[in-house]
Length: 268
Image (cartoon, one colour):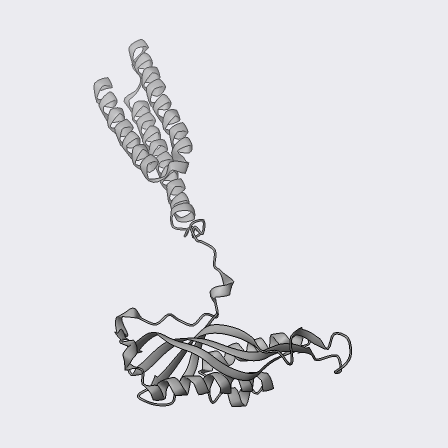
């Protein structure tokens, strides 16, 4: 009977150890609790078995008392296993099932100055053309646009500018005029005379044709104060009302299906 009791207790001990190992693998936080309970269980098994053996050697205990001891031990072992499973289940739902916060450490900063930049055109639809494809009539249109745009700019007339430029350029001129007004100045570009013009690049994007032209012109370019009267000190802020100066920029013109040319970009 003593040998049978040792076999049963060994089976129970192996079951408890296997269950404890499974819980430790699934719930790292429960390792300390599981180890402590498992140690108590094993100690109870060993000392319980030793005491039972000693009592059996010293005196024959009734079989009923031994069976009760085994039943109590088995019930205690099952209760400990259930407690361990409950602890592992709570940890699983609180720790593992809870979604972790996203890691933003790898994100780079954003340049706010790029927010209002127009989207770059796709290079796959761009077809380069020869500069010789620009006719004399096209060049005359570019020259007239230079004069008309500068005149409307000097008048601060956005309605007139709308006839000569794209919506993006209209927004650009509107912002520039508002900035000048906030500084109390008004820019004039009068008596524009085209000195030189060079076709730099020609291309198409689907039904839209683009031409970038290097322009060099002379004009009376000056800034006047909006808060002072003519003759007062500080009325002429910059430039000369009488002496023309030369300026140069690269202007890009666009048209859709042989339509009217419009200014679409300016590069200083």
